[in-house]
Amino acid sequence: IAGITQAPTSQILAAGRRMTLRCTQDMRHNAMYWYRQDLGLGLRLIHYSNTAGTTGKGEVPDGYSVSRANTDDFPLTLASAVPSQTSVYFCASSDSPGQDGNQPQHFGDGTRLSIL
Amino acid sequence: DAKTTQPNSMESNEEEPVHLPCNHSTISGTDYIHWYRQLPSQGPEYVIHGLTSNVNNRMASLAIAEDRKSSTLILHRATLRDAAVYYCIPHNAGNMLTFGGGTRLMVKP
Image 1 (cartoon, each protein chain N blue to C red):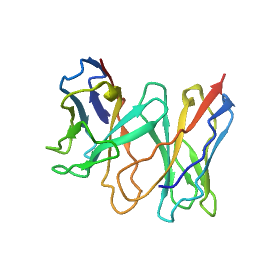
Image 2 (image 1 turned 90 degrees about the vertical axis):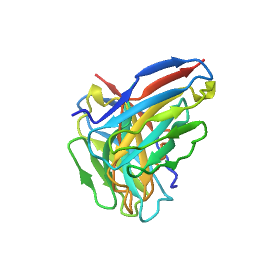
Image 3 (image 1 turned 135 degrees about the vertical axis):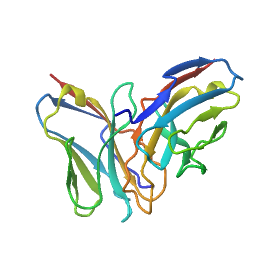
């Protein structure tokens, strides 16, 4: 069972370059999420999608964009990377959030991104 | 969001039970209490969650205080593979899980 697959596992990128982080899930979950994790700050939500065709902004959306063309894929794009976007990026998915917090999230193993 | 307080770190011996505490005194009546853990160089892993009643699954047990202001994650027999950072997260309707500092569990052979 693959669950959540993220690619690449790591990347070094020059500042100013465009980069797309890929995320695919095989659990048919409606909701998907992108988080970043920085040392000492825990995980912070960047963008989310409750269902295919819809997206929403999280806590730290600036400099990032997402799309949700189908249920399985949720790519995250950095249009013009900056050094402050150096981080570990985690994709997650869950059944529909619904009206309460009864849905756990399932995470991928992350993409380590370094912007020089 | 409800604030949580967890010990920064705890130690356990292998094969012994571990009780990981969490205070969430500002929790709302509709917040579920979720526990996740993060092993080194991996993404967070869902462990267990509950609302009011104690919960058991193959990984752990969750004991929730009657007033819901605290909870305890119980690992019945710690193994070396349980060494991780454990996060207690009150969660209600909405999308964001708010990860605090968590408890770093060290397991000694």
